[in-house]
Length: 429
Ligand SMILES: *Cc1c(COP(=O)(O)O)cnc(C)c1O
Ligand SMILES: [Zn+2]
Image (tube, rainbow, N blue to C red; front, side, top):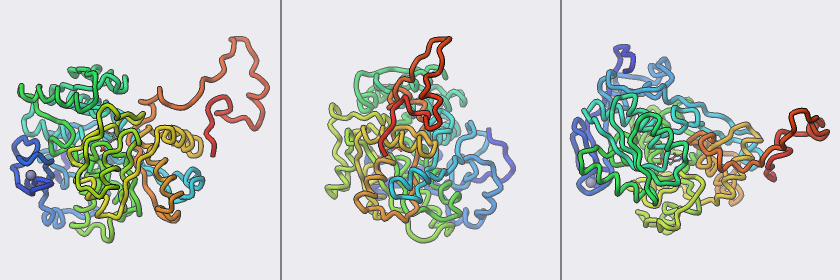
């Protein structure tokens, strides 16, 4: 329940297919269009324009519900919140200078509830499900989405059934269990988990799978609303996004389109960059071949330490690709080795320890600068989508030396030039 200050009005009107534009009633639970494509949420933007101004929003709470007019929840009594949103934008000045992009910034989503930006989609998705009377949710997940939806479902008193690959990060599995979700492991990838969750759907569970319900995008869209507001109602030159299902990228683009229609921002979209791992890069391959949709990445070959972007086939592929092309953006695949190296390089330079997905954007920026796609004087915003703490196992650091209880510190330890990483892994500049 959100404290209602009397100003709560959602301008939600209807749902519209992202491909064929068929309309659907937003006040019934809906999944995908008859044509199989994701449904997008539409608002009465004229009404928003005449009822609220950017400066009204400035005085509201520091969470994503400050954008209530552009969110689908009609009654604040249905809001399920843990204080998500309004994450900081942090300059990465030292690391940025090191790679030739001094205007590098990160929006740091690692401090959100459940340790990833999946909290945004889950907060809005679970709230709207509650508003529509949905009592049982199911989703396949690579980990973070399951943890977020299970957590918000627990808060809402909604049942949640999660199916995840056996090698999804252990901590996310435990999070789901700890908040009381039903959890099943599958020996396979998220696509296999999806087929099993589909059986629960036939038994009456509501599918909250990526882009199979319309409201997760609306939660992730708030990243784009925040970016515009935090930049002073304008946008950076480039937005670099670690892309799995692409919900966040589609959401940020949707947010900026809505703000442009409102007249709250003007000018060009930022150039969007979709970053994938070279171990699973269906969007990059489609972008390079000029295709409008992506061929599924062979499931037995899909592998990366950046688990959140290990998505072989994305339902919203055509929306991701059009965001890249409409904005003069690009798509790029990076190696896991580079991801892990840049993760530490940024941490030691600026004290920002990203998750591997976030670090993939750093490896991409470094490459795009070296290739000349980035000129070096642009404002480049990367999304760090989660907390590194959830991926402690893959951090490329060594084991510190172990001392006996009564041992003296070795002389080199207390020497003036010694650094915290002297005994661990140190990446080469
Ligand atoms: C899910 C996830 C992603 C990919 O998000 P999409 O919006 O579905 O592309 C990136 N990073 C992390 C940490 C994730 O959990
Ligand atoms: Zn359709």
